[in-house]
Structures are given as structure tokens and as C-alpha cells.
Image 1 (cartoon, rainbow over the protein chains, first blue to last red):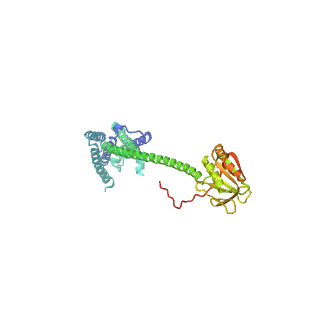
Image 2 (cartoon, rainbow over the protein chains, first blue to last red; image 1 turned 60 degrees about the horizontal axis):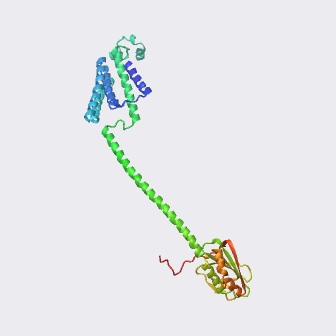
Image 3 (cartoon, rainbow over the protein chains, first blue to last red; image 1 turned 45 degrees about the vertical axis):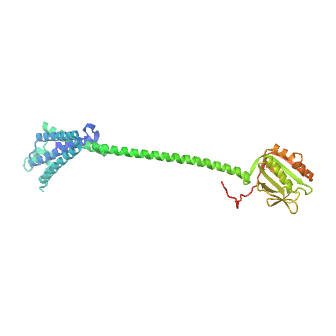
Length: 110
Length: 264
């Protein structure tokens, strides 16, 4: 309950404050958001399977975001930032899909 | 109904029908790690919204990679160069057209001026200016075409620029019939008196309307043995009347020459 409210609060804050993304963060923010989404989906799945752990979620969330940002940063330094960003998004997308499939099976038993 | 009841009274739920998972989801807990989870999710929502907004605002260029941007910049530079060259050529064309219009307008004005001058000579344009009127009466019927031709020659020699000869339709009346005198004008004796000028019968009194330098013209006519003397010896009278404004208004149609062609 509280996490869902917090999510709504964050969305509302973003809509109300209308901040602009700093130039230095611009390449990383979309990847970070996707990585965080991956962590959230994993957390929902774990919750439904009854193995959810707060600490695991916090650590996986932060490390997901950091690793994704680091990979993109490295890619930019190596001159393959575009391709590496695509790769990160693909991997995270696959994970999100598999998590979503697990959630679907758990909720709908199908 | 039981679900709604659980939302408002979660602590009353001890009948075991609700699974642990749902109970844990719905039970308010405020440990530090829960705050961390909530904070992270708030940050996630915030970041997602910010990212979506910035993507919508910035358009496609903001998310393009550096190489793409360089490519786009190159394309734009090339296009800029092409358009600049096009501007140059168009301006050049405009300059040429403008100067062409100017020169053709000048040529047209010059041609019109020449047409006016030639029209005065050819008798197709009315002329006015200082000059004199020479009226010749013929009491005895002895003024023939030779007298008028002499008078015209004297006037031309004195610098007459436009000449018109008037005569009356019937003898003794005011001059009513006009002929513009030009290079091809001919003087013939009429069969029953009078003079045929360019095929038109004129009867006395005759009147020359002359545009030119009036004093010179008057002297040319009044020299001893000149036109005035000649007319008086033949029983007529020649009256010279100077004027600052003589209107040579008789016109002559411009005929196409049958044989002569411009050779220039």
C-alpha cells in the first residue's frame, strides 16, 4: 500500500514540479528508469511468490540503476554508447517480460 | 465485502482466509526499510515522469547519439550551402532582370522621343512654338504656285521647322482648308484659279503658319526682291504677323512607302 502511494506521489511531484533533466544525466536517466522498472517487477513477482525481502529489493533496485548507468557510461567512453544502451534495454526488457509472465501465472493461474 | 472490511480493519482479520501475501501488502508497517522502498518507488515515478516529459519536450534531437547529431549537422550544413548558392544565383538573375528592365525602359523613352521628333518632320504630330503667320491675298488672281513655293523655300532657308498652309475653300473667304507642308509637298496650279497643294485645292487668301525663329523668318521674307515684294508686284498683299505661340495643327497620315525600304 505505502509503496504504491509513494509511486503515485512521485508521479504527481514530477507532473507538478516539471523539472528539466540536467544535461549530464540525460543519457542515463532513461536507462536508470528501465533498470528500476526491472527491479520493481522482480519485487512484485517475489511478493506474489511470498519470498519478498525489503533489503533485497532496496539493494537490487540501487545496484540495478547503478550498474545500468555504469554500463552506459562505459559505452559512451568506448564509443559504443548507443549500442550498449540498446543492449541494456534489451536485457532489462527481457527480464521485465519474464517477470511479468511469472506475475501473470501467479495472478491468473494461466 | 470482506476485502473492503479488511482495508478498514486489517487487525480484525484473524480468520485465516486471507493469504499471508495479501495481508502483508495491506498491513501498514513503518520500518526504515519500508521507508526506503517507498522512497525508491517515489524516485522511480518522479524520474519516469521527468524522462517522459523531457522526451516529449525536446523532440527527437535530444535523444539522438553524437554520431547521428554530427550527421544531421553535416546534412544541414550542406543544405545551407546549397540554399546559399541558390540565393546568390537568384539575386544575380534579379540584378540582370532589373538592369535589363531599366535599359529597355530607357530605350523605349529614347524611341518615343525620336518618334516625336520625326513626327514633327513627317507631319504626323502637331507642333507649336514661336514663329509667324504670313497671309497672302491675291486681288488679281496672279499669285500662282511659284509664289507660294518661293515663299516656302525662303521660309525653309530661314530655318522654319514646321509649316502649315491654309487656304479658303471659296475665293475671298477666311482660310478654312489646311495642308501640313512636309518634304514631299507639291504645289500645282489649279484649273480654275487657286493652288493644288498635295492634291487639295486651296484658294486665296493663303496663310502660312510657321514655327521657327520669327525675326530671321521675317527678314527672309522682306528682303528687297523677296516674297513680299514679289506678291505686291503681282497685285497682292503679304502680311507678316509674328507670334510667340503658333500652332501647326494640321496633320498628315503616315503612309507606308511603296518602294523605299530602310537600307540601314
